[in-house]
Amino acid sequence: MKSIAECRLYGIVDTGYVERGNLLTITSQLLRGGVDIIQLRAKNQTSEEVLEMALELAPICRAAGIPFILNDHPELVREAGADGVHVGQDDLSVAKARHLAGPEAIIGKSTHSLTQAIDAARESPDYIGFGPLFATPTKPDYPPIGTRQITTVHQALTLPIFCIGGIKLSNLPAVLAAGARRVVIVSDLLIAKDPAAQTAQCRTLLHPRGANE
Image (tube, rainbow, N blue to C red):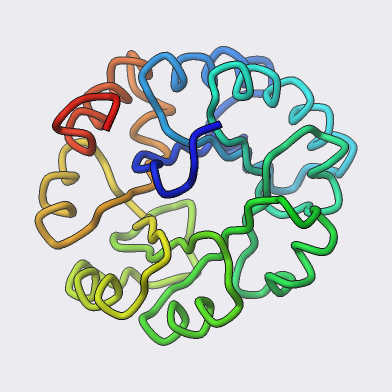
């Protein structure tokens, strides 16, 4: 399986954008386009529904050698065959999430400021999310933080940092120019006319010297 250090393009399959019946199709398209890591985000769904969806998506991610992450629900990671869990600022601690998900599980944590990023790093997650950089309906309660602190947060921390929030193919070059090395892209991939092609274009910008880097 690809390591987090190797991952640059993080795709989130969000049930807010993708109908239940299309989850497998969309995930397959993202994988075909070369996404490096996949997260299932199913807010307002029951644990049973999340597990059912995860059991459907985990095998195709595993077959592609791509980490499959659950948003929240660390208690489902092992049963679902997922590789890890992502927790928010107001969710469980990294230590508690790791205890529930398993010692080998990948644990990611959301951060919304430089201070939160530094604090989160002390919990020893495997990676952090940093944003939202731009306004996004996915995170309406968090004001955008812009791109000015991207270089600073990378200088302060050594763990993988995935910039997130309103990132699209159209603004990805500017985000990378501001110092980002890894990004999360949600709606711009999910609602694209051709999700696989959109993913591939984003990947080319993130892996400019080829897919094997």
